[in-house]
Length: 243
Length: 305
Image 1 (cartoon, each protein chain N blue to C red):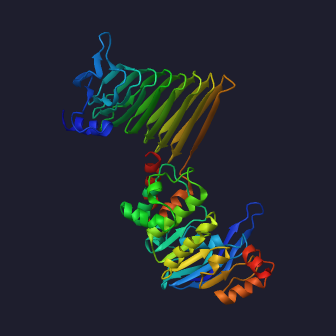
Image 2: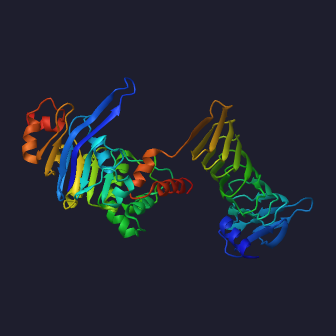
Image 3: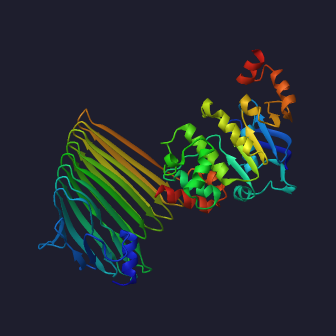
């Protein structure tokens, strides 16, 4: 189980010099074998939470526990080696590093063509066309997102942090993406998303809202809550509720 | 040939012993071994140090190795090698130089290479420079490469400086004719107090001539690098120059581009980026389980791959 206890995160506003709260007293727990979707408006701190969980940022106060152990001060490398796996919202480009090399770095060993195929075909890419390509500007945004996910799959782990995995991926491939999440069902999966189709795969939905407390609950109850709040700006949910 | 020679040869020319095809191995200013055949003839110069390499027209898929080894100090070796590539030929030329200097006096190799590439001929020219040895003596390379491309010719220059070179001042001149193409892939790694200068002067003279110069460099420690390019478009042509540098520690890279579209039909592009490794690249690799140092090494290795 992954638990956040009274996690606060604030940054200094460069213009005013005042501290600005991004996350305030967040108390959440994520069970193993559970898919959680975090949703909420832009700027409500969803990606920050993912970064804090991976260790990219340290909370200003509060603790993070994983299977009963306090990991608040644990480095990124250590977290990665302890089963934390992240897929970035905006994948990083690397001049000269090939898809093959990145997948090998991700899984920590040399991969043969079959191994590559397994990782890449699960995200709808043909290994033959990609393994020798550099992960740079020659790949499209959608291709980079898929490779980012393939890397997470290749790495494996116990906790998967997926920040808007569907962004930039064409609608036709949505179902394949959902299959990827379903395969991870025995892990702790935390997905940041605005898409209803992704929320439908969730066991739990966590709702972030700028000035309100974060609330979390089972998918069905959270769905009805979200649709009753017309101020929230999720197009899919709203359109469905209206139509 | 001793162990040091063999190691240097392997590093600079991927050679394990004597290569196939024509070759000329020079060690400490003297000929170590040579083979010349009817397709690729190697003729020693009589007026100065160096060789003429004559590739007959229509010779395809052949290679010639002309590595140079320097294993003594207090030695400056200057060679003049001229390459005459016949029409429609397609060859690979491997011309690395390895210095092993364990002394406290300087060792320097300056290869002055001139390529005359005939109509529709294609050359891949691979040049690797590498130096080692614990002595305080400098290990210096000041190569000059002149390339003349006739109509439809293509020249691929792959220049790599792998490390250990105290100082280098590289000069590359090219004149590109009608429908001809110059492709440069340069990689330079410096560390410690090393200094490297690389200077390109390219004239795109012919209609539809092209040049694509990509220089990637990594400067570590207290090392310094300078990249200069001067590209002139005198006709309807396309030229692209890219200088990408990663600086670490207190190293410096200075990039100075110059592009001059003399003809209004010339299209010339210059891109340059110098800076430290992007933080997000390190974060990504660390999130795959690498330490910060391993992540840094992986980025550099890929970049100079």
